[in-house]
Length: 161
Image 1 (cartoon, one colour):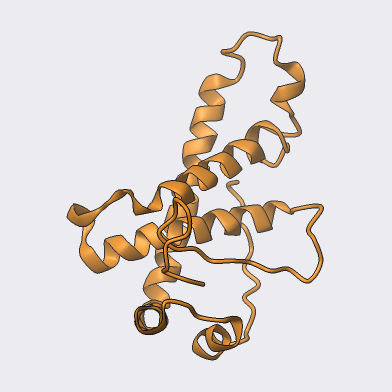
Image 2 (cartoon, one colour; image 1 turned 135 degrees about the vertical axis):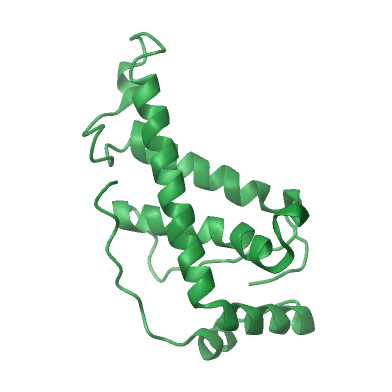
């Protein structure tokens, strides 16, 4: 994890999985979206809504893309069901548009609320990590694990999704 600028980003978190992921579950996708939103939420908690800036644009773009993909391509939404709109694109461009927008906003709001709850719950740890990043610009995995612990959460994805 770093706060040092890299190309067009101001900083980033790098995930190095032991095995390449060829498949992603609905839960993994949802919690990836939550992680992408957590940076903006942390900034809002620290500085207030009036200090919102463009720093989270890449994270918000990726979160939006992942939600849309879950709904429109991967058949992961409980209400839209097992659909892949890319395969039926010759149908009217308004096909399921309103329902898709409604479900998109629900997923986004649900991820935001979950992320906010996690940020609030773990604020002390987030603050310690931020101080460490300011001191060193980079936090390696071993240091990160010392700060956050090795306990893995096993949350359940909200049933409304």
